[in-house]
Length: 192
Ligand SMILES: [Zn+2]
Image 1 (cartoon, helix red, strand yellow):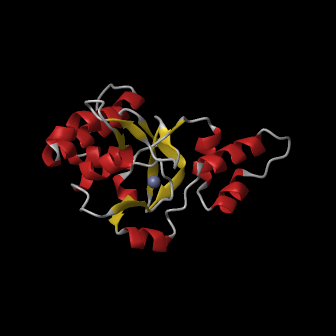
Image 2: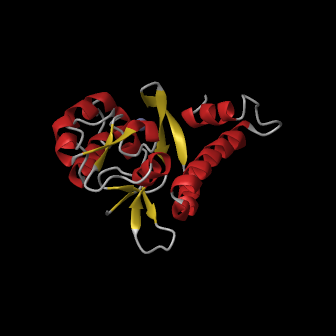
């Protein structure tokens, strides 16, 4: 499996593979290299944070958009399912997908929100993120996210003998099957 980032990195290097490196280490290196280059050029003050984030994402084979896989944050999630982490000075909590967007595309224009085109809130693939007005985000219906009450209800259902399928539950709540899977996998939910 190759991530979008992996492809980019390899092509940037003229297609030369990284020699004698374990596959997983090579992929992580390529992820980090891309982020560090992008962030170093656009937002040097956020390079450390972005580098830290790049170590905690992995491709999600079951979910893609525009031909590239979702890159899902494996750290703490907010109640709405967004990846969250501490800022470098530990003074604030930042949303990981917003850092990813800014690392790849530059600062988010004032007043705009980030829409997940792939409908996976924990995804940080910049190719799946678009800065839009809040009105546009609402119009697209992509503000549909699980509430804490939803999360409790879904976990309760799966503790019973005959739950609906993940896809049926995802359809009922208007979210992706991946969102349900991540919830049931027990990823941490924290207050925003
Ligand atoms: Zn995605």
